[in-house]
Image (cartoon, rainbow, N blue to C red; front, side, top):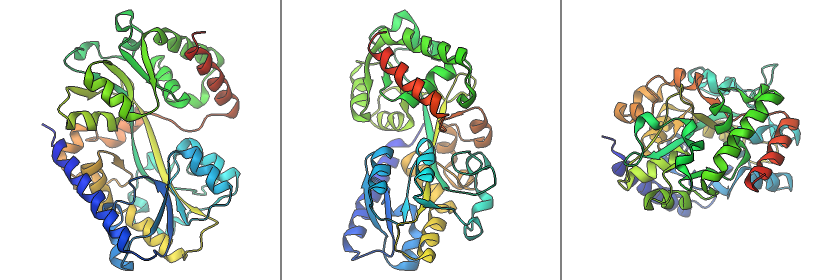
Amino acid sequence: MRKIPMKLKVMALSLLSASALASTAMAGEITVFDWSGYDDAGFFEAYVEKHGEAPDFSFFADDEEGFNKLRAGFSADLAHPCLNTMPKFRAAGLIKPIDTSRISAWDKLLPALTQLSDFVDEDGTVWALPFDWGNTGMVYRTDKIDQAQATLQLFADPSMTGRVSLPDGVADAYALAALAIGITDWRAMTDEQFEQASDFLRLVHPNVRFYWSDQGQLDAAIKSGEVDIAWAWSATELALVGEEVPVTMVRDGSIGVASWACGYVHLKSGEGSDEAVYDYLNAISDVAAGKYIIEAWGYAHSNTEAYTAADQETVNAYGYGDVEGFLSESLFTVSVPQELDAKMVKEFERIKAGF
């Protein structure tokens, strides 16, 4: 049995302690522009031990907001974008390359992450330090759906009318559709495959209770029984199991699972020292940070040694017992060519409108 309730308590306590730490610090040596909650001191204990205080933090709600704020002139030393936004950061000239010789754990990081095309150029220039990653997959009520039924084709089954929720996001929706038609690398999707993926989403549309944009709304709908299956983040499973709701996420690569990944970039606008920046990057890439995020947050980490250091029951419950094998079967939501992205955006709006 997963020890989810205890992990949720640990996460809550750690967030409280991080807030207390941040309130007592007059000013950190660097500023980190991040997602809310990532000021959790469990991620960067080594930095605090060396510098005596946490960095300063400022937060964004999503990748686009963060990118636009930085492009408008907001200054920080580090930011934490995810894969599909990385090309924008590079094209806008906002970031510096990462000097991997200054990252102590670089050789211990998962090659499946360090070699992602959005993080590294063909010439080997590294633009981001991979930190956290996780899954988007099929989450379903185990008291209403048998395991044998739990395939991606169930989303389009007429028996599921009004019982489905999909994300109101183009990338997540087309990740599901691509996997449903057998594609695990959507960058090379042909016109024919794009039409097949779009047709799958059209079949799903009549079954959709609502397209979710807020995880809390989705979690509440699954808990109440309004929705029985959803294409959702792993955080939904974590939250609902913690509330003793009978749900699980499908993590079988042969059925279909998508993965997201985010990393830290070194911003040109920062005024902090490079030494402090790399102290922070070393702290968050350390095995201790990896162990913590797996056990307390339920997210995966870039350091390979974190999976042996973390509680093995937890590691296996999340499907990370063979992490490299797991990643090899996953569809990473890397950025797609601009033309394909535009087609996805246009077609998804048509599908949601019933066309």
